[in-house]
Picture 1 (cartoon, rainbow, N blue to C red):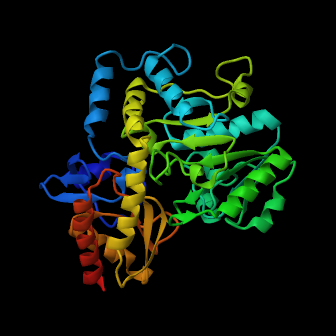
Picture 2 (picture 1 turned 180 degrees about the vertical axis):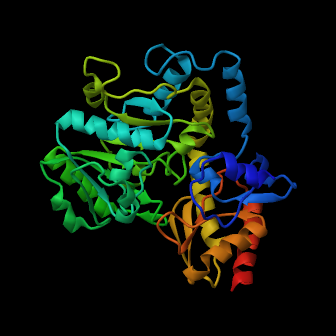
Length: 395
């Protein structure tokens, strides 16, 4: 009955799904279905639940804020303490060049806002991104998606967009004085946790500075401690012009934003509050309160060190004859399987064994391993047993 109603009343994203889970509740690193069956959540709601489900500090912050007010006015019109406190705290943890944030609802909105900011800044049209990149589902974000076949049904997309090969320093000369901005993921999630090399990002930063093109980092999935740093760009010791954030930024509630310098953000002011960029619910006080509670935890150096340690534990525990390698950074990981033709059966067996994972958007040879950062070592051991059991069953 529930599956029928789900398909009848909710517009579907795909006509194919290897499993459907009817959620009853979630707690910590587990999701429970209506029968009471427990599942290890190794997707973390697609990198949203970095602190797991219903973290006490997050829930307490939400409860305190909901007793004060919910939505009162569109973003930017009224002074709201949760927005100010979050922005001040976040910017204090970032390089001084990243000192102002525009709060939104989601990652794709952050990408849209960053692209608009770039065009307002240098009055150029060309946008460059990289093959196998994913930046969201709105038209601007689709226009810079690094997979032409996914764009095909929406043609024509934004004009003057082009994609270069990821990690190919030799192609960076194609970034010129015609280029408004370059959008890049430091770790390509859709490609299966394909990490940029330090040399590539260093050369990219240098080239963008030379031609005055804005360098936009898409850290929508890699933020809030997921890689063992607050944001992944900190691994590379370079600073983007614009930092796009979302997913775990909201600690389970909708929240996104793009961060830049105050000097850059002034280009959004075109004499009317709705011309540069605008949002009704962006920076919702509940989301900001949740985000602030999460930030206090994930910004702790000891917590981030623990993330790096757990990432190494996952690499150790999830080794299997059917796994060619485990790649990624911190706890933003994927297991590359040796027989990708079996990936659907593997996902089904994982689900049957109480383990939620999936292949990435552009790569059906990997299984995502992105559990909540709060998962314990004992839970990692138990989860690895279920993981290897499913691989054994399919093999």
